[in-house]
Image (cartoon, rainbow, N blue to C red; front, side):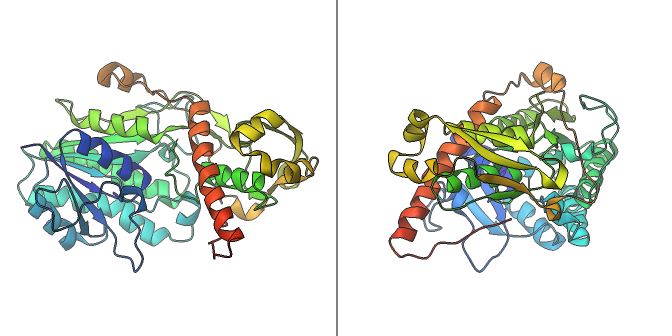
Amino acid sequence: MGKVALITGITGQDGAYLAEYLVKKGYTVHGIKRRSSMFNTDRIDHLYQDPHVENRNLILHYGDLTDSLNLTRIIGETQPDEIYNLAAMSHVKVSFDTPEYTANADGLGVLRILEAVRLLNLIPKTRIYQASTSELYGLVQEVPQKETTPFYPRSPYAVAKLYGYWITVNYREAYKMHASNGILFNHESPLRGETFVTRKVTRAVSRIALGMQQKVYMGNLSSKRDWGHAKDYVRAMYAILQQDEPSDYVIATGITTTIRDFLKMAFAEIGVDIIFKGNDVNEVALLNYIDEKVFIEKVGESYLDNFRKRIGAEVVGVDPQYFRPTEVDLLIGDATKARTRLGWEPKYDLSALVKDMMQSDIKLMKKESYLKEGGYKILNYFE
């Protein structure tokens, strides 16, 4: 029989890619999802099997990181060889609005999993992966950031994750658990949530190209992030738990890019050049040039005439409501330890990531455009 894995946050970007990765390796995967009155399993629907099917390799359970009894019951019933704790209230800006819930889920939630494994006497059997974050570095004390760089969290989300990081280390040292932290820098994909900055950009650029949206409003355009592809990062999660000894690893590309440049790359992917003018809250981006051949190939000839008329128009603005109370300006990771010990190397560079996301969102927004033109109601998401 293959191994059993339990994934919290299985309906999220990372959970979906990891579930697919483990199923292909022969695992039986159990996933924890929060109860909702609406289906929220879009990312894993292609893996889902009817509960009446025998010998299923993907099984879902209702649960929440804030409910210790529930977590203990699920862990006891599933007896996992590996636990991947990917669930979190993971939106940094929103964590300032919901600090208590963020601390409960992202901080104490980790403790509940560790304590459940200890109380159920699963320490010899179960290995635990804790999803840490580059946001731990916050007001960075060293460039680039590595495993030994001091932490300086700058949001309730990062502070909660700091507790999750250190309680994982503490249980590893106190109870000899195979518990490891993956300090993952920003990782994106077509499955990224619509409210995260990269997906907000690729959705908006696609909608602007199709004439469905005039402009997108952003926060701090000068923030720098180390962006990789989520598919690469779930491979690192798996590799971390296959090591004989537990440890903590930075997973990053080592390349940093501003949000401003990410916007430029997203527009360039469809043959469009933009130029930025102004400063701070008055900064805007204007449509400057269209490579019509590329635009027709990537978007479609039927959309060109209307888009051509918008040359010189503003397509990006800045709205102070998207600024964080305390900003994280620069993140860039040093993944030397992961490369040498895990043999991990990213397969996607940033341009390949942007291409993947733009292709997916152009296709998705075309579907919405067709529905709208046909008189069907579509949902408008703005963040």
